[in-house]
Length: 64
Image (tube, rainbow, N blue to C red; front, side):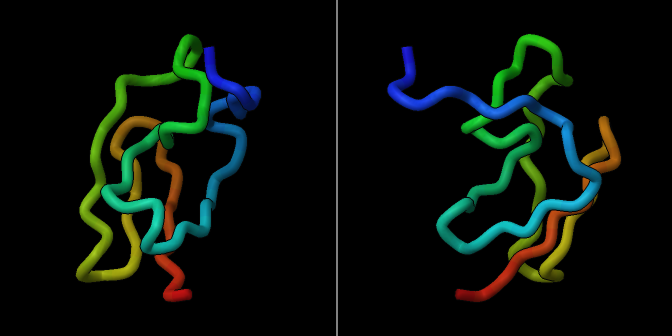
């Protein structure tokens, strides 16, 4: 069991992520998968944004 509770998946339509979140997947590793779609890896490094083909969530890469 994880030491911190998992977040509910697919609760927002836009997510801001950093380089520490790469490789980027939807849903992200810190979310509960039981009620979500299969994990898919999204190419975000070159364009700075990626959209999940399953749920339509938009991910924006922020340089920090």
